Image 1 (spheres, rainbow, N blue to C red):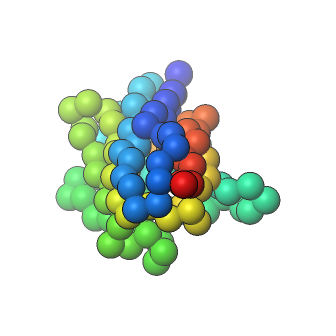
Image 2 (cartoon, rainbow, N blue to C red):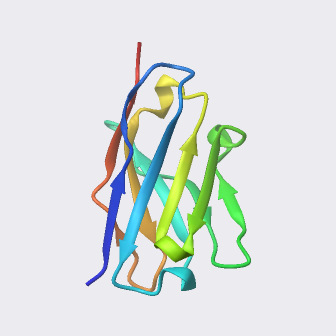
Length: 115
């Protein structure tokens, strides 16, 4: 059974940092691209960043490029999203996705950027 469990969300002030983690199980983690998405209230879910299997290549949406870093640890079946210089517009529920033929999603973790 595939499971993706996100953690690391929370409340942070503008300019602050958070590191999200997504622990995967139930499939061969190292064989697949992984991605982070987010959904703000009243908006559609959007792709934030993705990382391919080895040799790793990354993609970032324009609004987070230079501030967010996606990485993976295949030995720990975990993908990370380091988020720096956070802005209130980054407030959303962040979801992890395994880009497998069936595309599995985690349940999300809330990130709130506010004073």
